[in-house]
Each structure stands twice: as structure tokens, then as C-alpha cells.
Image 1 (cartoon, rainbow, N blue to C red):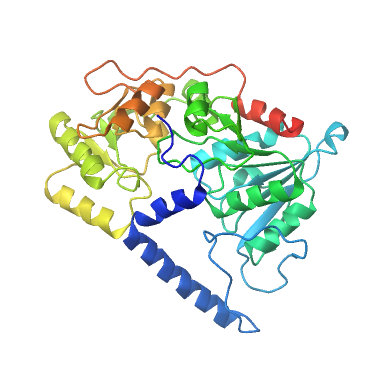
Image 2: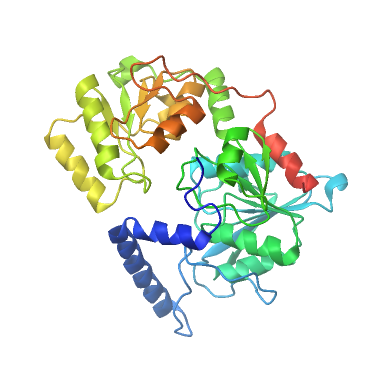
Amino acid sequence: MGLNHPRSIEDWQRWQDSRHRARRAKHALVGTMRRARAGARRPDGDAADAAPDAAPAPASNTASASNTASTPAFVIVSRAPQGSAQERARTLICLDSASPTSRASLLSVLPYVTGGIDVLAPAGLDLPEATGPEWIERGFDTLEQAAGAASDAAPTAVVSIGRHLAAGAAAHGIARSLDVPEFVVQHGVLTPFAPPLPEGATLLAWSEADAEFWRSGRTDVGARTVGSQLLWQAAHEAERAPRLDSVLLGSERPVFLGQLHGAELPRRVTGGAAVRFCREHDGLYRPHPAETDVLSRAQHRLWRRRDIAFADTDAPLRDLPNPVVSVFSTGVLEAAARGGDAWVFAPAAPAWVHELWERYDMRPVGAEPTPSPVVDAEEPAARIARILEEGS
């Protein structure tokens, strides 16, 4: 088994656009209103440029930093080389999100990179890893301007989590225009609905099985196995810090990690699994942070009226002592890596979900808990940084 769309980003985007149409319409309306307000604030009266998730244009050599008083759309945060031995190496990291998975995949390399660094990202993201007196930030009105400035810095390697989002697409355009190595770091578990790898890129995968799955028979993309920084961190967090006392939390009832937001499965599967598990095993439902849309909030209200208990989301998931269950969330592997009990549960799941469980050794409810993933002694971030600076 492999990707449903192993080569064409256009085919994948059409599938993505077919999911959650109401949510996309809402986002489009909000984006239009924001651009209109921004245009009204501009001295020249021009409307603001496209939203960050619009398809970016190739890098432009005529780009310049914003000189207006408006809030920039994108930023580049830069750090000078740390040592003379790496003065010629310069890594461009293109980041689309400040989610824990994206930051673990891309920003965890920063302490290990000795050459120059540029981080291109949407403005307003909280990026503590790239904050401090050694970092210089520049703002840009458009992605095209930011991509042009990043290209002018002459990176020797470009890295992202893929070209399916705006900054990642810019990374692909810059790598191709400058003919420099492009790397894609795996940031979560892989389903058949994952976007295809960019042409000519090298995948930095969690495992050989994941590399084979994501490449899906393609020979125009390379792959190297580096391990999962996310799971490495989870394993080492368990060693450093005790988890919250279950007495303080009031219960060690199992917590079902919600995935209503996902486009891969219909809500009757993800929601049905959650309700059935919570009723049969006295579980608590923990909504995913992305379950903020109208349909998800309505679903939550209905479940509460039907006496489905909800877990407190104030405590970080990494601190919970409770057993964890989900359909196929990466949180199952994180909990197992921390030494906790974790299972998967989805009575109506299609065959690809069962294949995913097998690939990651996720154990279904009723079996022994999911074993802790094997992590190497070397931190994956250090391995990735070495690959980026070698450029191969």
C-alpha cells in the first residue's frame, strides 16, 4: 500500500479541496474580510495580497522587505554562521505552522546547525527556538517577497515538511530555481492521503517502511532514515520529568484522542469510534485542538447531552498519566514512547487503517499496550542537521 496520489500535487489538492467545503468557505470569507480591512488601512488603498495558504509564485529576485506600516504576512528570521568551518553552508527552513510536530521536525535542528540559518514562516507564529539576540527578523508583505529574499541569501540546502502548504511550496520553488538540495522531513504518521513528495526532493523518514510508503515506487525522489525527533523527545521527556499525579487529575480513566478534524476518515468512523469506546470503557473524550469548527462544536454539545464525559484539555497531553486511545493519532506513539499505556480503536475502520496500525506496531484495544518505539542514541535532529549541512 502507498499514497492515493503519489505524484501529482494537483490531484492531491483537488481531493483536499473536496473535503470540509463549509470550513474552506468560511476561511475564504474570513480571509477576504481581513484583506479588505488591510487594504483600507494602506496609504495607497491597494488590497492586501493573497492569504498565506494560497499557491505561491516562484521566488523573485526583485523582492524587498516591507516598507509599509502594515503587519507583514511573512517573516524571515536569520542567524549568522556559528563557526568558520561552516561559513559557506546556509540552510533555509520553510515553516508553515508552529505546531509541536512541525517544530520538532524542523526547528529542533537549530542547536546543531553551525552554518547560516534562515527560517521563512508566516508572521505571528510563536517560535521560541528562533528567538534571541543572535536572531534578526525581517518582515515581508507577500510570500513572493520573502521567497525572493530567501533566494538572494543563496541557501545551500532547503528543508520543509512538504510542498502542500505555502512556505513549503516556496521551498520547492527556491530549491529548483537555485538547483540546491531539497529535503522533506516526516512530521507525523503517514496515511494514503498524505501529499506527494516534491520532485527531486530527499525524504528524511522515520523508518525504512515509512520511506517506502511515502515514495510509493517513485525513483525521482530519494530517502534517508533518520528516526522521529517527536518520539525521541517523548522518550527523553519521560526520563526527565514526572507526569502529573493522577490524584490531582481525579482519574486514570482512559482518554480517547479526538480526530474529528481529519480529512482522511468520515466523522461516522472517527466519531463513532470515540463514542463507542467511551461508553464501553468509561472513557473520557479529549478534543483535538483543531476541533473548533461549527460541526465539531455541535458534535461536542450533542455528546455532552448524551453523557459522554470530556477530558480536561488544560494539562498538556504529555503530562497525563491516563491510558490513551485513538483511531490512529501520533499521540498513541508519543504516549507509548513516554512509557504509558496506549491503544488504537476503530471498529468501522477501512483496511488502510489496519495497515497503518501494523506499520507503526499500534496495538488494538484488548491486546497488550502499544510498545514504546525504538529510538536511537543519537538525536534525530543532530542527524538531520548533519545531512542538511552536507547537502546530501
